[in-house]
Image (cartoon, rainbow, N blue to C red; front, side, top):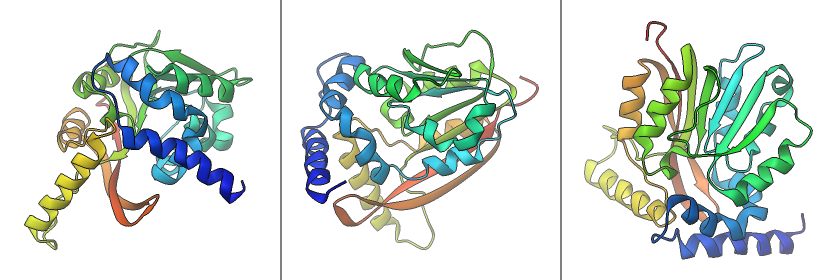
Length: 245
């Protein structure tokens, strides 16, 4: 893509980010107002903003014929990260509340018979049968009632099923860093993301560990577009629902 066109597209997205998430409407209406104007350029910009998605998909322990639900799936961009494994999947249900993003997802899913795009709430949607895997890709922090989203994900999983999360996070306390400086950094990221409806909360990982005691979690950092000095923290979580549940 020519540089000038890319800058123009980025401007559309950045303008919405500066305006922030509207706060005087129902959640679905907030999402539509925020993402609608930038939906056509969403993937291009988020590919540089949202790290770790391809790694998350590659690490999901999927068997042939797996049934999968993505909660907060947006444009369906993560379908592209499955590669050849997508053909071996029985079904993927992409669930989201934002009509504008789901329109992009429907275009992407066209011709893929094992993919369904569903407009629904991640806290209440249930597939018609238990599934092998549920994952959230930069969506858990966007869901106001995230506790219900996680318990809903747990409930729709088969015993032994897997959950995957990649999302921004509050940095873990490190003995190497001065705690006061780390507190300042955490406060900065919380306020910076909150403007756009992203709620960083260390309780996310605490609840994940409680629901899925068999797990693997890593924290990493990535650069932010147009903020070259900033390194935003994010984490990947892979957990398994207990067999006796």
